[in-house]
Length: 135
Length: 87
Image (cartoon, rainbow over all chains, first blue to last red; front, side, top):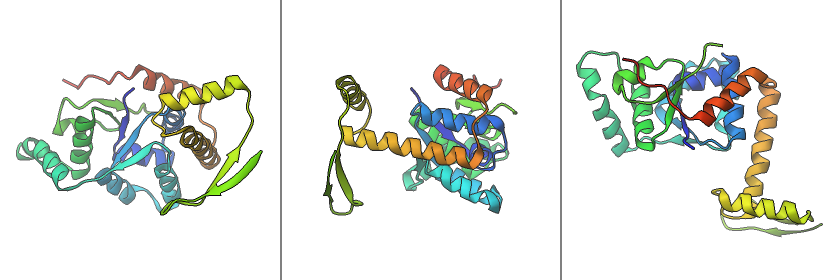
């Protein structure tokens, strides 16, 4: 069974209990032993977006047994940057967190959990996403 | 039940614990451990306990998950079929 990549929007959703589905998704993933991956740049973005009172929940989220943080070393930075090059030169709105998320998803063959697939598909329309329902 | 201690360099202290279980449970545990990524039955049991402890803490923090949302999430994870890219 494939794992899931958590992008910034998913991390923020889970850490702030923004949706009913988000918390349930996390519990289901843990119960079913699904590999979860948080790309480090998306995690940085999430830390910048999560309000202070919710930081403890983000900490707890990062202690999820099968969650690992995907690092960004020089080689991965090059791959992610090159992958985002076309979108950037075409004038599309681009952000580093989405670039790292898409690169991790394509390399690992995992689906990205997100509430906003737009910025991911700008970088690579072929990226597989599982959109968080709006409840 | 017996217990002892075992400590490797760089690892947190570990203790040895012997428990008695029915034979069918022992077979099931060994089988599940072998099918998992765990290095040993001990590692598998530790993973299960850590998972249960994390679930307890998460539910304490945010509450029990909504049953309908939980069912939908399980279905999504089982189906494992990503949405096609938007055209």
